[in-house]
Length: 279
Image 1 (cartoon, rainbow, N blue to C red):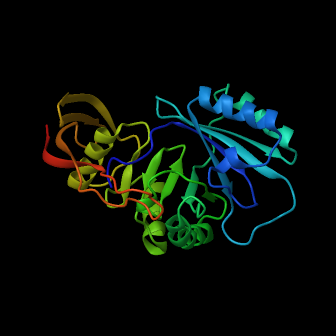
Image 2 (cartoon, rainbow, N blue to C red; image 1 turned 90 degrees about the vertical axis):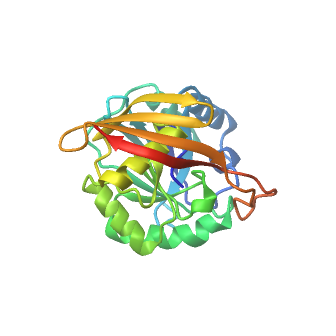
């Protein structure tokens, strides 16, 4: 599971209380010009567009919310929120994608429950959404497809950019409670979205070896590759390890059906830990 988080540092969230099409926002019956504007701006910003809704019974009336979440290279988290009731209101998202946004917002907890994309996401995700929503009602949203259906239930903390997978109701509450306290554990970690797969796997291996740490307590300082062999250097802030070198070997797992709706058997890349040492 380590090394499977989708890469990206900008998210567009659009609250939509109706049924979610297979392809999410792109499949909604909205004003074509507005939808094209949002998608074009999101593509230019390399942002992921997700439909969201609160867990539990669906509200049909009242204004809905949208947000642009951004994780900067400095580690700062920025957000911009707005409201919409008419399709044309969503054009504000394009403007928000062009500015940095504001500091000081709490993180957003996204639980994938996109059953139209893969039924496992709904079956496993909805109980997790309910459990997290009861604990943090202002922070938690169900969301459309985030990638990695085979790891359902999937939870993304944004704009921290941290993916967790293989969760159930109990483990999700414990995992997010630790995350919000500045202690990210390796057990259910898929990866950090500002890193590439081998770097994600290296960070997970390091946390497994040396214990939990905050989102910005470590950074990847260097990455070396020789064929399928990777060496990742990670530097840490006190009281954590000052420098950790992680060696990984990439290989393909045996072919299998990766998702419930996967049409063919395919092989996933797995990163095997060869060595890890601190200095």
